[in-house]
Amino acid sequence: MRKKLAVIGAGHVGETTALMLAQKELGDVLLADIVEDMPQGKSLDLMEMTPLEGLDSNLRGTNDLADLKGSDIIVMTAGLPRKPGMSRMDLLTKNAEIVGGVADAIKKNAPDAIVVMVSNPLDVMSYQMYKVTGFDKKRVVGMAGVLDSTRLRAFVAMELGVSAADVHAMVLGGHGDSMVPLPRYTTVNGIPITELLPQETIDKLVQRTRMGGGEIVKLLKTGSAYYSPAAAAVQMVDAILKDKKRILPAAALLEGEYGLSDVYVGVPVKLGAEGVEQVLELKLASNELEELKKSAADVAQGIKDLGI
Image: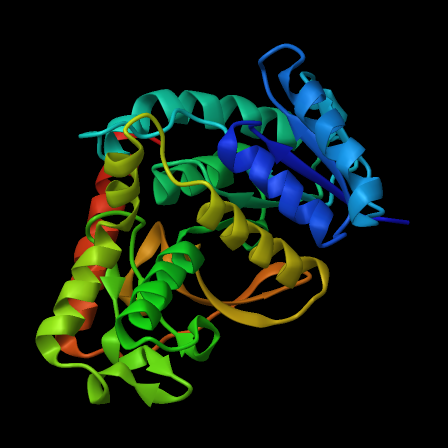
């Protein structure tokens, strides 16, 4: 029997996630949204594509979250998008309402699902989902670390003129301006970029990574990124469904790791069939650890502001 994958939110990120899940034939896809008939239309369009692509994933749309029943993995993308000049934290209150309502529906209809969070502000919304569902911390994980790291990978590949496939990167912390890219853990086929690029260039790439989402928002003017966030979420779904035990940076609940507790923040994790099966603790330099704690403090403030 094929796995049931649900994508909540049929905007650009959601529809692209559904497309990529189908293209990888990871399972049958339910696309859910509150806008009447919209997810049905988009899923039908995607379904009509499958014969051309030779795909055997079934896609359907719904406005009823009761249809989440039996979902193995749920990708949560619903929420207001960022607009120019808007920080992720500006989205806090409204998106918390949206996530809270969806979390109630997931708890009721899909109590055994693993949830991959994409909605912003991502780390706080992951905590909101974890608290409202009451799920084990392993089964609620945030996507941002994969996205932030792949942005750094892309920028390094562009700068050096090398294959992006050979670039690996590690970005920790909250999914926002205080994220913590780690150049010494960023390599090109095993060679640290600190040996390939001058520090001035590395600093520019780090800053561009921190502002990566905002750069796209500024260019689009009426929207935010969706191809790369969708691809990041799908990579995580793939790792979980196939029990790959991938080591990926993702937003996970910390309980003492890195000296942090009761907060979701981006760290290296092992992703497998149970979700977040392990949090890995890197040996961070004092300045790196200080930056990570500062980033986590920003997330903790958001959680406090919500009164969760």
